[in-house]
Length: 221
Image 1: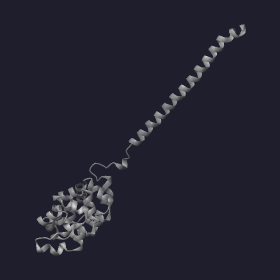
Image 2: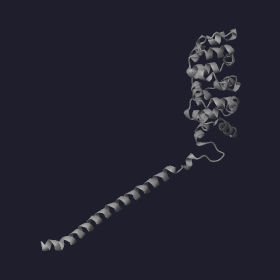
Image 3: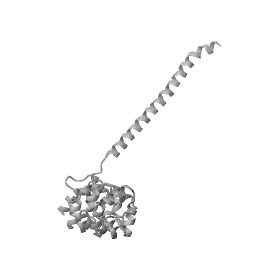
Image 4: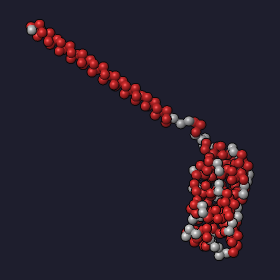
């Protein structure tokens, strides 16, 4: 019993030291782990924040998004086309081209056919057309002007009258103004323009408001 009492305090002290050592070891390991993860996180943030110089446009040059368009065969074939040049400068075209419904219409064969017809622009501006549009009665439109009879009886108009994108656009005055533009009608008669209008990069460039910038670049070629 005397021997046990003699070693009791040294044993307790030794046990305490061992426990403290274990606690210090695990605490230090945890801190090192957090520092390592923090350093990795900082490197990831730095890497994600870096900007590739190839993605930055040189001041005064075309943005990267439009470079491929300017170099496309369709765009180059239209570069000297006066109607296309005027179209890119047209405010109504710039406004409408920011709307996905209009870009969808450009690839519609019925719209392509009707847009080339000067009478179609006049029809859209008539009171009878606008009234039928408000009443969702375009498919049963009976124009008061006999000049439009043949136009409204065509298969292209019948298909277009049921086109939701066309119905949405026809309510916009800028759309009616664009239809009345000779530059737009002449461009719609160009296969190169129709092909260009179906390119996703061209559509995105127009939606971002790059029409005027493409016009400037075209004038420098």
